[in-house]
Image: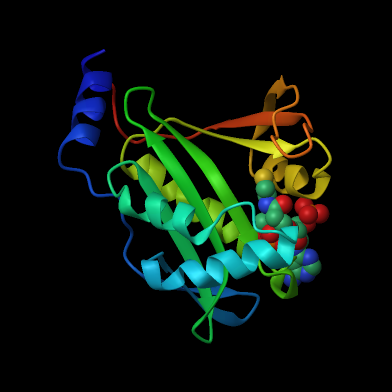
Length: 185
Ligand SMILES: CC(C)(COP(=O)(O)OP(=O)(O)OC[C@H]1O[C@@H](n2cnc3c(N)ncnc32)[C@H](O)[C@@H]1OP(=O)(O)O)[C@@H](O)C(=O)NCCC(=O)NCCS
């Protein structure tokens, strides 16, 4: 119990969620993984537009998320300085759960492992600060994303009926247990 309080308290006070930039090799190509900044917002909106048509998230929505440095972490992967994918998460310090708010990869870069690297980077960043679970919601019709999540250990935990505001599609809530190094004491 004390451990839970400690993480909640840390979240309230001195944690700034971030990762160090790192070069990653995906199938022989060198990409850069780093924290997202306000300069990346237009690229993130463009990735949304290319995947969804009308971007579900506006530039303002992304900027607001990026300003919440104590309970949000947004990562991008770039190739030749171009942002090709991003992932965002919220952190619940009391429940030690990180929640993927958004993930998308430029269609031209799909199926090359960028999405998997983004999720694995979030696994690492989450366990490092003591998160024990990660969750997300995904459209029932988005079987491709669900397959990726299942391969990375997520399981369907709950069906959320009429979850999406625009067309009332149902969502699967999916969860994965993260192996935490930290002990609850
Ligand atoms: C879901 C999404 C983020 C996945 O990103 P991605 O970079 O394509 O994901 P990955 O490449 O890591 O993995 C996807 C597939 O490519 C395969 N793959 C990976 N490297 C590959 C390669 N070199 N050659 C062929 N296939 C490959 C993986 O095995 C995986 O296969 P699967 O879908 O059958 O499980 C991406 O499809 C996307 O942006 N979709 C639109 C937005 C969206 O739906 N977001 C999720 C909202 S919940």
